[in-house]
Length: 234
View 1 (cartoon, rainbow, N blue to C red):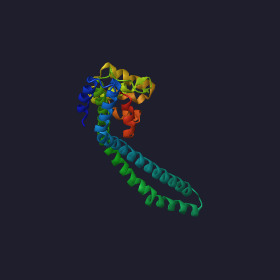
View 2: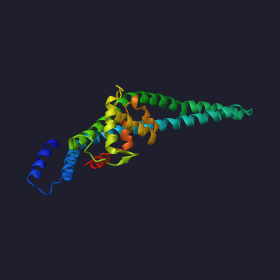
View 3: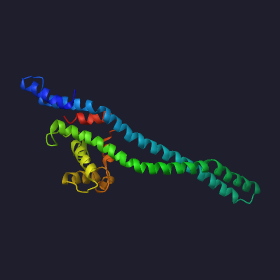
View 4: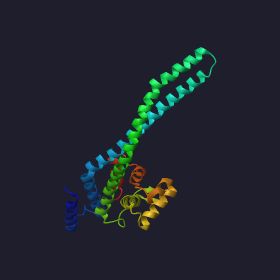
C-alpha cells in the first residue's frame, strides 16, 4: 500500500467514529508505512555512504604503516653507515637496498594508490554529499507528509539544545542551498548553534555541503538508526 493511500483510509475510519484511530495513532501508522516505502532506498543510501568512507580509512591506515616501516629502516641504515666499523657500514648499505626493494617500494606504489584514491574521493565527496542530502530529503519528506511542516511535528531527541526535527529540516535546506549561500535565518541559527555546541566544523556551512556531517552527527549508520529517529516524530 502506498503512503498517499493511507491517509484517506485513516480519515474515513476516524470519520466513522472508529475509537481505535486517534490522531497520534494515525500519524504513527502513516510514518511506519512511509518508512516501509523508503526502506530499500534508504538502506542502500546509508550503506553506500559508510562503505566508501570505510575503504578510504582502511587505505590510509595501510599506507601509514608502510611509510613508518620504510622510514624506520632508513633511519637504522643511516645510523649504521655513519659507523666506522666496516661490517656495520655494509649492514647499513644492505638495509638501504632492502628498504628500497621491499617496504619502501611497496610504500611508493601504495602512495600512488592512495593519491589516486584521494583524487577519486574528491569526486566521490560530491556523491557522498548527494547521498547524504538524499537521506535528509527522505527524512524531511516524512515530516512533510505526516505533519505538513515543522510546526505540528514533535521535537524528537535533542542534539545539543536543538530538536531532531530542526536538525533534519535545516540540514536538508543547507545541503540544497549552500552553493547559493542564500540561507534563511533558521538555517543560520541552526548551524551557528551546532558550531558552538557540537563541533567548529559546522562553521563551514556557508561554503560546503554539510549533509554528510549531519548524517554523521545523527549517527545514521543503518536503516534501524534512521527509522528509530523518524519514529520519534509522530
